[in-house]
Length: 269
Length: 269
Image (cartoon, rainbow over all chains, first blue to last red; front, side):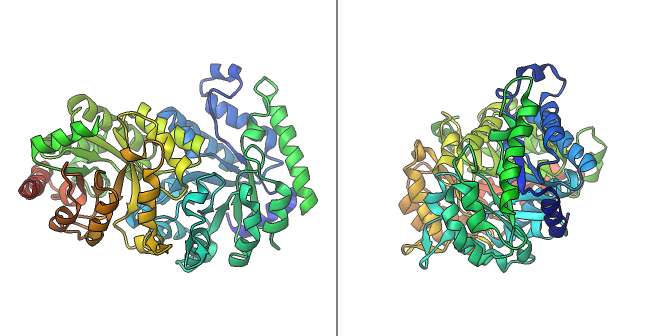
């Protein structure tokens, strides 16, 4: 998918909502455990109930790997279901990968070719040659961790190098990599006050913003400081939507929560 | 496995060799492609031929994920084979994971409980709460990226924070985390001259050292600057051993290369 197609979809749906498909079998409605594939059954129902409100879905790989082969099969079925039924929806493999060049190339193959995700999240610690193999794919998107939503973001990301925080260095340096102008970045909503500075460095880039809702970030602040002329934002919500109800009405509850967020977003567009 | 058991095994075998099981179906002997599971067949043959010379095996997850479910089944069979037949051998899931706390906990479950690896490599960028869920497991080991073997290591890892390189900050800060004294660290052999400084900061920690051989690192330098009173080193070689021959004699060729490295190591012990 091209960035232009993503922007069109955002304008059409009046939404920049990304729904995190972080499936925990201890949290899904217990009647689903009788299904042959409870993880996929849950995801399919959530997607069917919310696809008109969201422009992106983001499974976090950890939740699938924790269930072994069974989890990875469910992930495969989920991305296939999305690609087949909703090809206009942007898909994000939240994997936070990164390794030496030839090895990152294998991860890129796994996520972009085999699973056919539109994008993957990548960690910047190992530098240029760990990220460029992902950037080599045309019309696929690499979303680099910049300033994350957790408390540990303050351990290294905000430490200063030559008077400037590491995450700013990551933003600046990564722009110079081959196809670096196509990068998107993870910026946590819990640190919305940093968004103005970030927009100065990467005015055109899309930002994937986790941390609204359960983690305490404010949508209003994110929009105020983070939006650009192409909207330039994907705001993720996972638990707040997918676990809005633990009962048989979980799909309706998820749709209601997604609708609430979509309407808030529409007001900022 | 405890660190003490690893040290005993190093002394018994007079080896601190770790063999990287980075299986690429384009590089393995072509007659193996007729096997039902070529990846596992290759790994099993390499393990059978080298287990008396190595103290650790390290599959890099990217190579398995690149083959989808088939690759991950082969990984499962490989770790099961090692745990059943060679429980004294240290196993490393080279996964370079790291995410917000509850999500890192899911990765820890995947690698430590389901797959039953002894250790996993973890990226430090997201800080304390992304690493501590791994450290919570007793007699499991978390191997934190410090200074990697690739060119991109110089993009951020060696940048100075308050006059000190980021990787040194990672070493110092991580020691203070809950169970941080149990951390091991990845330090590339291609940067052996940095090992003296690293040993000053983490004198007791085990270092996993990739980059000897194919990437150009020197075993002599690694030993000179990196060894401590418990040896404290695991030196990884992958391509140089497992692809020593692409023919039907690949197992013998791998054993010969491993033996050569083991003998060089014994001379430094």
